[in-house]
Length: 229
Image (cartoon, rainbow, N blue to C red; front, side):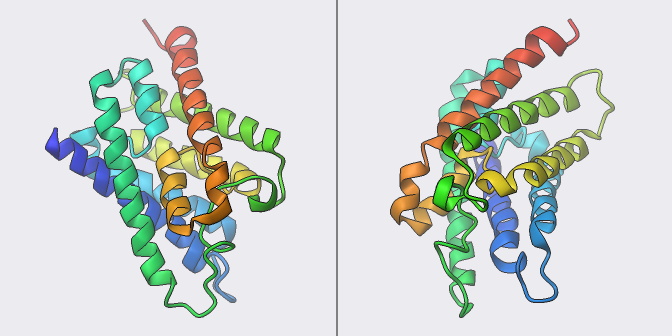
C-alpha cells in the first residue's frame, strides 16, 4: 500500500506540474506559445506517461473522481478511496507549489489570472455560467470514466490503454478549457486553488462535486450498458 500511495502522490505531482505548468509557463509565451491546444496535449501526456510508469503499481488514478468511479465499477477496492485521495491531493499540492516557485520568478506572473485556476463566471476563460460549468464537468468526467473502463477492460487491445486514456484527456481539455479551464479532477483544482487562495476557493466545491458525480455516472453507464458480461 505504501508503494501504491507514493505512486499516486508522484503521479499527481507530475500531472499538476506538467499540465498546469504548461498552461502557466508556456501557453502564452510570446511567439513560441503553445496555446490551449498545447496545454490540452500536455495534460494528456502527463497521464499517458504516468500510466506506463506507475499503472502497474497503483492503477494510475491521479484523480479522486477516477478513484471513486473505479470503486463504483468494482475495478478498485473501496477501502483504498480515502488513502488514494489524500495522496493525490498532497501530490497535487506539491506540484502546484513547485510550479509557483518556478513561475513567481517570472516578472509577468499573475497568480490570479495566470495560475491555471478552474472556475466559472469571472474565473472562466470565456465567462461561462455556473450551469455551463456544471454540465461540462459532469459530462466530461463521465466520458473520461467510460474511456478508462473501456480501454482497460479484458477485451481491449493490450498495452494501448494509456494511449487511449491520454488522448481522451487531451480531447476533454480541447472541449472544456474555454468553459472551466478544465478540471475533471478535484486534486488538480484543489492544488492550484489552495496556492492561489482568495475568492477562487468559493468555487472549489464545483470541481469536487461535479467530477465525482460524472465519474459515478460513467461507472454506472459502463457497468450496466457497455461492459461485456
